[in-house]
Length: 397
Image (cartoon, rainbow, N blue to C red; front, side, top):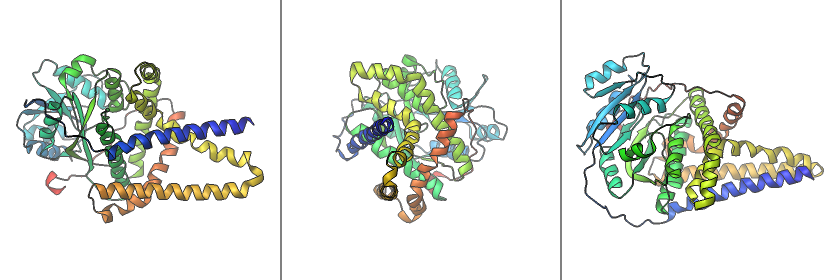
């Protein structure tokens, strides 16, 4: 009897969690009214590029930034712990350099120090990119429009830079889903989008108001949480496109996703109570969003509970349980493949180039399971640098 109750409770929570994101994701199909630009201000952007051993890729990013159809901005490379020729490469490109003096354990630390160094600088907003990105020429002009529409922060459209195998393609599909069914969906229904680590802008006044005291391995999710708790809405600039290099090796992907999952659990531990209290008082759906986002690593693990309990509870009908499990797995696999195919087509990508990613996208999601097990067992997980090798110019995208 107890096992049945546990099974029903777990299934109920899984269905509620899934239904929540399904319903909120439908906001993607809602046609949003054209926003009226509230002013024509030409905001000044200070672009921050955290860099550690990025000699292979950073010149292409800076080159794409120098080709913006917008002229009111400065570029700062935030250099930390580099042991390669990144400094020499950057010096030749004639951009500003901030060399970190404090102990840097993650990208959040580097950004925190850079923002402190620049706090007295006259600027309207900061734009933040990873060194492996390249940026569309209209990025800053589109972000300027978004700020002039009344937003204090905005996330750009994250596209894929390297479509070399099933793994990198699966990453691309994953971020297309995030772009469409999280950020654009919420933007369409008047709710807040989320920051995605790179390709976003934040007004200086926001930093002055709430600071940038991030503590976790996922500074983007944590800062999004800060904004939601302070009732600051994040916009989504769909036409502000940037291209990101994704891992093409499981070993590197493991490092990255281990950090993502651990950071989510750190945020859950630090902010769940505050988000819950805020949601209880204000009924702000964005607080619920963040609670569920932080809970994601646990959610994937508890989906295994019914697979373990049902054969025990219904052992007399084990043949039917096995058939049910097989049918359910097939339906789940096909649903994920169809979703992957849909987002590739909607984003006008060549299906042939993404075919391996479409077919194996469920495997990409499944490979998160061992990662989530490990981060629960391992108390401390350090930020591990990921080497970037995809030297692609913006003209090649």
